Length: 178
Image (cartoon, one colour):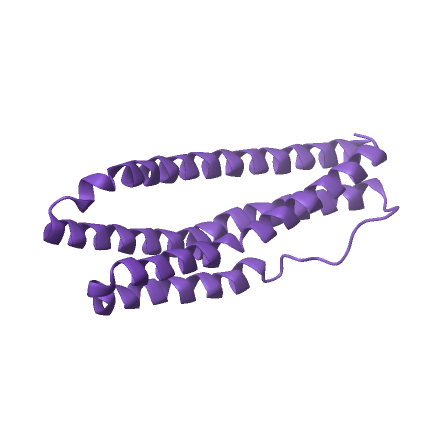
């Protein structure tokens, strides 16, 4: 791997990390949308539904802090040597790996609580109206498919990041041996 390729790879990794961090803004937005819609549509159950919706919203807002804490590094390698470039790549990949791990608790968790509360609201309405729940089945199926795909994608992403770290370790060992 040449110095130019390492520098380009470093820039690409840094850009990908920033895009992922910007994507974490979706958690509070989704939680807020479900909260607002749930309070509007299920006004009869407001007393029961408001605490879990509020908890999910607060949890996702706190998640923004915990997801972004220590993730925005100001340093970008310029004309650094090969080992420094490799080290920067490794640190950037490790940051992405840490972000993938944190997202499960701080972004996915609140969204699941919000969607779960919404599903409970649908079930409560269906017992009163005798028919709202079957109308919500496509939504429930989409949620189950999304959850399954989410875990499959995250597991694959974790494996790919670990493989990249292993490759960088191998390159570094080869460079030491020269």
